[in-house]
Picture 1 (tube, rainbow, N blue to C red):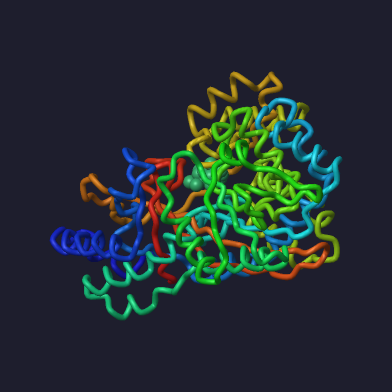
Picture 2: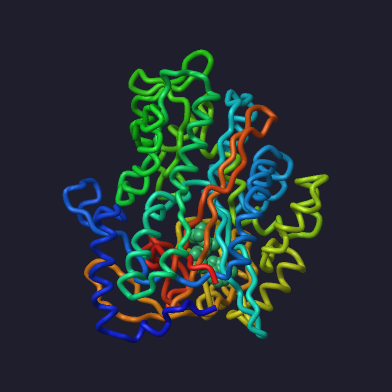
Length: 474
Ligand code: ADP
Ligand code: MG
């Protein structure tokens, strides 16, 4: 599945020219990030890292990923409403993983009080790699579903134009015209706007809950600006602001700085480092409120690695989505092998298998954001150490996906231009809105292709490993 420009990859002069054009095009198009040195100021910005060339993606797998997205939207939504499933599935995890346990406590607390929220908005991104079999066939295999703060839907709306220009510079005009338009930011904003409308208060705002460090602000601005274009007011606040100035009225409407908040869109709150005691209190306040949380705490829990592993067990999908055998089959076809490390015979067996043959697996804790998984020798050592302790339960095991590498250049500010063997990960953005029991919107909103050098087993764009890319369908 090589792209039709693997010939030019070795032409140093052509590559150098194209890279110079590419970087300026990215800056012009707004493929931007703040710098590590000045993450709170837009005075100095850089281009977000991206590939020089679009990467080949098998068309059939690309279409498969789009087709199954509405199924995954339904699934995530169903899990978020299934207390029994979440309780049972996370029971062993919350005994040993403090972060999941704290989220779970808030979940139980808001359920006990009774939900004030009646409109639900999900924005997720289901990520895949193209597993290459021994016979050369490729298969779409899900890496994970991100149910909170799934990013780069904004910046990636602008990469297709940049890559189109690069292909033209390289004399590939016909190929340039085949790049697909893609605008997840617009689709995300559509979902937020729908939720805002159903909340039903013209004067209420959408609040982006953002991190203290805001390097990826331009990605978020793409979505914000789509909302302003629809005459919906957007404010940006941190947990700290919510703690200091947030309040609920008698019917649990959320107010901050005297403004009513209709929708809270989290771009924060997915890792333990995002929380101190005050931030946990702010999170609880938000969850108790009537505002539409994207995601609500139940939907965040639906995105844990432990839930993902449980979904792969026989019968689980059928139980969660009764009467939808086609959807179940479409989703299951994308699952890689996933294994529980819960205490007991089955867990002992798979732990022993992984210690004997670590390169077959990835060991995953209940964490997000890249850079947390363990591979190879490190996997073996860690598993060896914890195999007889309850700590084992905070991880899951997954079969390692093996994509076919392709040559490309990863363009990153202040880095030399050099060719790398690369693999890609395709994400599809899903958006849905539910009012009471009625699904009023369920869509695939666009895609994100991220590419990294094969030396890095793990890590996303924000983690400084992967870069933005554009799929070229083959
Ligand atoms: P996170 O929540 O940290 O993003 P992921 O499950 O997405 O966790 O894993 C992070 C990265 O690790 C992925 O982007 C991918 O590059 C790599 N990875 C994860 N699972 C696998 C797998 N089963 N096979 C190969 N690589 C994987
Ligand atoms: Mg990931």
